[in-house]
Length: 214
Image 1: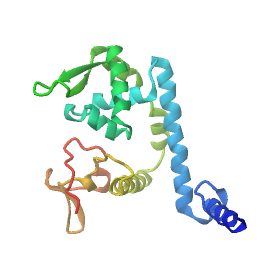
Image 2: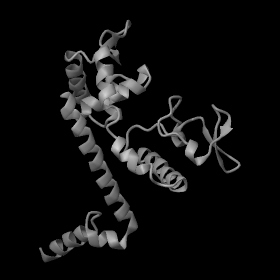
Image 3: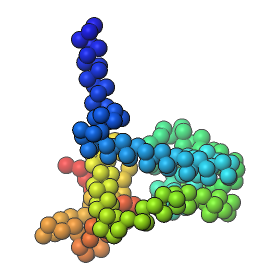
Image 4: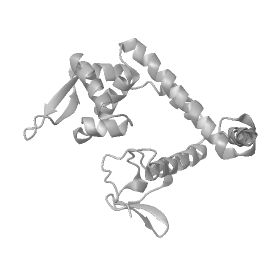
């Protein structure tokens, strides 16, 4: 028993959330920092949710539908996009439908399949909530251009790695796209037929097509 307790204690000391571990390992400090930032999103989203009488996930779904092509706005993809189950997204869609915020476009070939668009009322809700992250952007805007480019480069690579390791189910960044390649050591888009600067790498590309995994 004492051995097990010592082993457990060792694991606890190495926790990302242990301040002592953070002082010894900058990766732990960064992960703890990302967790703090994620809390900011929750707080800002809840503030908007209370104003319009919706839940955070309902607002997120409405905003996603507003800014993405219709082929991505269906139950299967939305479940993957937000890392929840299909029944959970179906419940979200049911409530949004009851509130008159969305319109279902039922498939002619399969009445059980449908894509989703916003109703006029849904668009009105999005106009009230889409800027929930503005307080965070205002702080990010204060960084220098070189700091922003460095931060963005790191974030885009991290998102790609999380996706490739099965932690993040959906990503639409250039690194995972079939049109992305390296050309003489530089990032290159074969669709746009141009080299990409670091700041031109997209996180959510409308033309994204997933690259086959080897």
